[in-house]
Image 1 (cartoon, rainbow, N blue to C red):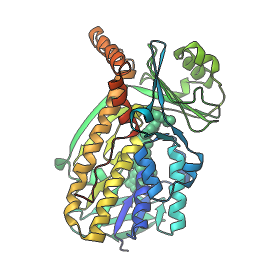
Image 2 (image 1 turned 120 degrees about the vertical axis):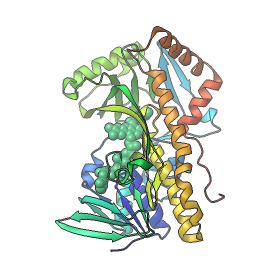
Image 3 (image 1 turned 90 degrees about the vertical axis):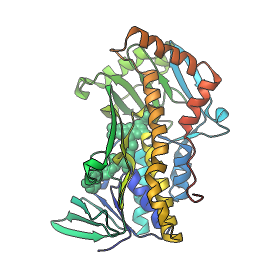
Image 4 (image 1 turned 135 degrees about the vertical axis):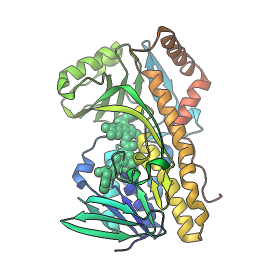
Length: 396
Ligand code: FAS
Ligand code: PHB
């Protein structure tokens, strides 16, 4: 079997890259180890940056998002009982974010892939990538007991943090940067109307709270919990009680509770690997970087990488720009590190750190007072939250 680009992983990165390349007439094959239902069953991101929204529209998969997604022009912060509005659009010259779950983005991309007729093989195993330093790498995999071998021009490792792609690069080539956070997020999805029209990011002495949503009838809440907590210890009742304790009276009284559709605890990690390419293998999305979800950047940084790789491969195939191939890693990392910084900043600003010294707690409080009490501070939060601009590739 031969193709131009083998994409490993059918999460948002792999599917979006596949759609954009297919639309550009570039041959692709997507390999996914799970089933479509399993991929769709993972409840993850909910906020799309303006750049991601633009990319989905460019890929021709935004019809349902534009019909059902919620455009948000602002977000709220809450600390010391004070609610601080951040008027995103006013502070960023009209930019906004879209509330539309990653599950729905993935569903739209899966349907588009299916209608395009371009191949996506689910339920593969033993994926191996060889000859990535040559100009015709090979990918072998097992499907239905048969071993298959594909030669290609490029491999896009869109296979997430635990995938095979990053492991294929010799360890001595890689530089890893990591910070593990001393707490997790207990998340709940419920078919209850959101407690507030906009998202609320709240610091509370009992721990961070995020009030998010998927639609006008479906809410998503997160509570900071110690890493020792197990989701089995958290009944719906206990979750709602704790959420009410961390919200001010006016919000806790408005809160509509109900049965959880999903409940899980996610550990928080900041991670980046450099470089994000080696020979003809490119790392994309969670295969190369992880952020704590406080800045709503995980899915959006994956889309950012896809933006750069798609444009670079189009320039290569359509205009012979082989020189751009080596620019991918730095272009992607320039924006990844800014996303890592914002996610680190938001996590530091809003979470409760047991082991912080009293001085450091004062510094954290001063940060909240400054960033949430000045137009300059609110503006820096707003421009990072809606998404920093992509660097232009074509003009390089
Ligand atoms: P993904 O991990 O989504 O997809 C990788 C795909 O590759 C998977 O389908 C996997 O099955 C497949 N794969 C792996 N190894 C393979 C192999 N050897 N062969 C074939 N296929 C293979 N981001 C936010 O912005 N906001 C959030 O609130 C948020 N919450 C999150 C909660 C959790 C629990 C997790 C884990 C992540 C969360 N994220 C959040 C980040 C998340 O949304 C990722 O950024 C996003 O899924 C990245 O997409 P991909 O890079 O496609 O990786
Ligand atoms: C979500 O709705 O899942 C969500 C929203 C914003 C975040 C993190 C998660 O920062």
